[in-house]
Structures are given as C-alpha cells and as structure tokens.
Length: 443
Image (tube, rainbow, N blue to C red):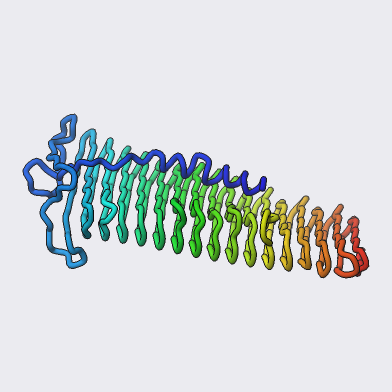
C-alpha cells in the first residue's frame, strides 16, 4: 500500500521512534549515592571539574529506607544532584521489591540518568531532571512504575518502562527531543517537546493492549509521533504538532478497537492516523490539519472501521482510505474526507457495504469517492472543482456533484441490473453518469 507506506515512513518509523530509542543508554549497574558523607540527601557539586564527590555503592545495594510513606512497602531512596559541568546518575537493581525512589538532577551543562533495572520490582518512582543544555533519561523494569524525565532549554528527555501498568511522562522544552516507550499492557506514555522539538511515544514489544500514548510537539519544524508498533487491541494514540512545518502521526500496527487521532496546525502541517498492519477491525481514526495541511486516515484492511480526515487551508488535502485486503474482507467501513479552500479530498474503500464520502471546497477543488460491493460512494466539489464517484457491483450507489465554473462531475455504477449513478454539475460544467441496467441521472 503505497500511501500508507509513505506516510508511515515519513512519520514515525523513519528517523523518529527507532532513532530516539536507540539512543537510550543501558542502565548502569552501579548506584551513585547522593553525597560523600552518607546522609543520603541531595548533593551540590563543589564547582570543580567533576561536579563534586560521590559515593559509589555496589550493584543492588540500597540506601536506608525512609519509612515515612505508607504507599511503599520497601521505601528506598537513591538521589543525586550535581552542578557545574554536571553529571548525575542514580541506579538501583533490586531483584524484586517495591517502592524504590530513584532520582537524579543535573544543572547547567548537565546529564541526568535514573534507572530501576530489576524485572521483578514494582511501584517505583523513577525521575530525572536536567536543565539548561542537559539530557535526562529514566528507565524502569517491572510494573506499576512512575517514570518521569524533564529536560529544559536545548534538552533531550528519554523514558522507557518495560512491563505492565506503568506511567511514563516526558517533558522537553526549547530545542528538545522527547521520547517515551513502554512494553506490555495498561501503560500510559506521554511525551511533550516544545519549540523546535520532536516528541515520540510508543508501545513496543510482542504486543500491547489497553495502552494510551500521547505525543505533542510545539514549534517550528516540530514532529509528534504516537503509536503501537506491534499488534494490540483497545489502545488510544494521540499525536499533536503545532507550528510551521509540523507533522503529527498516530499509528497502530494490526489490532482491534483502537482509537487514533492526529492533529497538526500551522503552515505546511501534516497529520496522519493509520492502522497499517495486516488486519484491523472496529478502529476509529481521525486526522485534522489546518493551514496548508494534509490529513490522512487510513486502514490497511479490516472491518467496521471509521476513518475521518479533515484538512483546512489553502492547498489542503484530506484522504480517508481502507485498502484492499490480501486476505479476508474490508466490510462495513465508514470513510469521510473533507478538504476546504483549495483542498482535494479522497475517500476510497474496497469491500462490502462500505460508505465513502469526499467533500472538497475551494478553487480548483477535487473530490474522489470510490467504493464497491453494495457500497455507497459520494463525491462533492465546489467552485472550480471536479468530482468523481465510482461504485461497483450490485446494490452500489455512486453520486458526484461539482459546482462552479468549469466543473465536471463523473458518477459510474457498473453493477449489472441494479445500482444508481448520479452526476450533477454547475455553471459551465460537464456531467457524466453511467450504469449498467440501473438508474441514470445526469445534468
């Protein structure tokens, strides 16, 4: 499928997710304690080259529990703060246990890393904070973990959680890049990058269900990608990009009952919501782009899907598409494509009992609707637009309406013996309607 492949390659998978998560360093096996005096508190560097002295624990050793939080049954704290040419790292590796606090903070020219590496651990709080030109990375293994990364100014923030029921949140400001990744079920992954940033939130691994991913990028040249990269069900993915030249992609591999939304605002924006795997059923997709934008909502193949694309602004285009399945069917899908101003709108589906509607408004608008097998195809274009609607096989309906100077409308229904083809045109228009044995209505 050329369209889906192109959007996926341009959106999330090329240079976005894979690159961002390849950059995440492996967790250190060493615990860097907070201070040299054994207090376990915060430590500010002594303004020398190494940012102050630190105490190093062997792998798996923990600081004394604080014992003041009933939420945690094994409340251990590892915390580091450094300054100057800063580097702060806090890592803990319990084989199991709950309620570990791992925090790192680095300032100025900083780098902060926090990790919990024990696969059997749960209910951990892992956070890293880096300011100015810093990078912040937080990783956690296990379940029910809260993982946070914050990097400001020319910053990069990365967070990863492996397991179930994790909450991953990332914030990067100014020229930052933010990436959030989870594996498993019932996870929340959110990433925000501002100004000239890129934000990526994804669910990876062998499959993921009931996950929520959000990606927001603000600023010129921003990109936001949010998705489930393997088969998964009942996931919600949102991607929002604001600013000039922005791109937002909301993606799910094959899966059922997923909700995808993408929104891009600003000049040259692109928004894409795609289910690109072998099959996908009962999915809801919505894409909206404004200004000079393009919006694409597409399902590779599947049943009972709803795909809506809205593009507003000069030169806008909206595409809603369900592709022909290699196996199985693509039935009972509803597709809507709306392009305004100078926009083109296209809706196409191959299968049974589908509805494809295209509306394009504005000068030189074009609307195309294609459906088959008892389906309904409707295309409408205003001003100087052309409208084409094609429906095939018995019980299909094709309607094309073009209004404006030089308009042309084409409606084709090729099923033998039944079906309708209707073409209506406006001033200076040319209309063509064709059907085999059915009703013909042409101006």
